[in-house]
Image 1 (cartoon, rainbow, N blue to C red):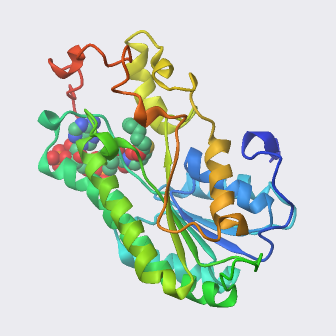
Image 2: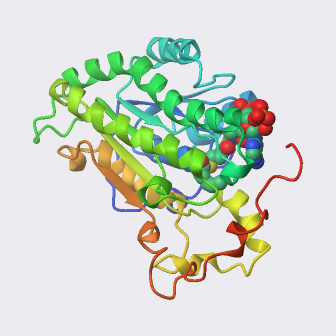
Length: 308
Ligand code: HXC
């Protein structure tokens, strides 16, 4: 398997070996964004365990990520559902046994679809809360004993370049403003933000940092593919709503991850790092894409026509 060009998953400003002998544990690690995050950390020295629901997709992605650095160890475990704490505990035990511990966690597993509230059943709403919010909580609960050990081994003094005991939750910006067609995800991610903030307060004294990364519209992701098919039905220029006038790149999310896990991020705790080109601020901008109240909120365009 050929290695991806580095420029596709991280910037050239980072130093080799900053994550040597460290281990990252990532849920949703076979996804486009999380795999770029893990690939960058592996390239800079870390070993990794990625987990997901799909066995083949997760194992194949682990092999691909391993090409980022000769001698790296990257384990992919499928059939792990973050809604089940036992699944996560099993994966953590295996990570500790095979990779020696956990220094960094990325809680990235998410579930989503587009639907107005009128098209959401109670179970549909609950499903996304279960995956995003409960899944993030389960990830924290299962990994925090290892994060505590790592933070103890790598004291956050401000001058110690060897970091550990860090968690990043992947969130979204839907709840910052409210978002049509995303009530389920907005509520779920608001909970994730609150969980991270509370983790920062409760575990900060143990040396752990907890932060949120909020990706905006990122090219080539599953989320964008879902939105993109809808956009194609319109005029295809939704990027114009983004102040920077383009969609983001997965490498831009990986760069934020490296920053927060490296000693450059030592004093960043309980923070939300929004990487979206300024997108979440723009819906109300004069002349913005939503300046006319959209027809799709007045009719049933986005209601599911048939079961998936
Ligand atoms: C309304 C829907 C729906 C839809 C599913 N449901 N899709 N309701 N509109 N389009 C309802 C079902 O009818 C059911 O309710 C309930 O949700 C649970 O559905 P299941 O298929 O049984 O759930 P499950 O197999 O657990 O799958 C979870 C999932 C699925 C979230 C529905 O899409 C999934 O597994 N997604 C994982 C990958 C993913 O979503 N990645 C995107 C992340 S991107 P009833 O009442 O019928 O029982 C991201 C960025 C956001 O998060 C980008 C914006 C899109």
